[in-house]
Amino acid sequence: MKEKRPVTKARNQYTDYTVREPMELMEFLATKMPQASRTKLKTLLTKQVVLVDNVITSQYNFPLKPGMKVQISREKGKKEFHNRLLKIVYEDAYLIVVEKMPGLLSVNTERQKERTAYTILNEYVRRNGRQRQVYIVHRLDRDTSGLMMFAKDEKTQHTLRDNWHDIVYDRRYVAVVAGEMEKDAGTVSSWLTDHKLYVSSSPVDNGGKPSVTHYQTIKRANGYSLIELRLDTGRKNQIRVHMQDLGHPVVGDGRYGLEDVNPLNRLALHAFKLCFYHPITGEQMEFETPYPADFKRLLLKKT
Image (cartoon, rainbow, N blue to C red; front, side, top):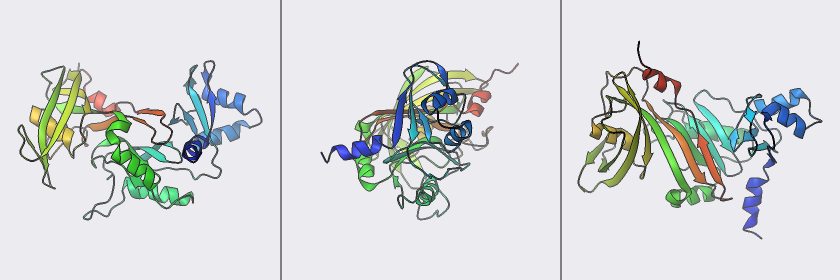
């Protein structure tokens, strides 16, 4: 029986409903909570305690389709989370999935003691009074935006870290790179060596770590290419170095590209998809954000 308790804890945090017919989210909530006023239902959305297919949803007119799952958190008095550099996409008793904005460090380093995704989330969980900290599972470069997750206890952290390649089954990025890609799809393989200030790449084994990046070209225009990337390995700066190896550095990458090619005033790299098996329930968790709008604008055909 003991093994079932964590699963129950993860699932019992929410009341689950299955959508049977098309309708807007507010209308659906009203049918499931007929005693609640419209103001109370709006408050649930504002407090970000309503999820649709595991993703926090606050849009009152969000279109629901048959088969979708709507969840309402049972936590009372939960503090709202607002931060311009970090958005909570999903949260349960064991995990927090967030979307990080560019410019925010994932975690502090010995040299950098500034505010990070890690410190912001620690403040959030302490305000809610349930725990003292979150636990780091993986990182994104400071200048890369997108989806990442944190554990809410040490055991879950170790489960995710020790079984990362078995648990995470799809993780993708989107990038804008300089120049028009020669191929529609391809793979880059090399050995990467971390020199702290930069990462070097070698086509032959030189003692570095083997690294594999798959790419697919989505669009070419205006001297740029929009590409999707999938990693077999998750090395530091891997995408940025491999794009440099191809001769198509990521736009805005002053370290592995061209400093003066930065039309977006940011690194054009975004972790847009994260799919994994929940470390406690085994449920498939799939999260996806749209391609950043400024990435797409850069490739709009000029007339």
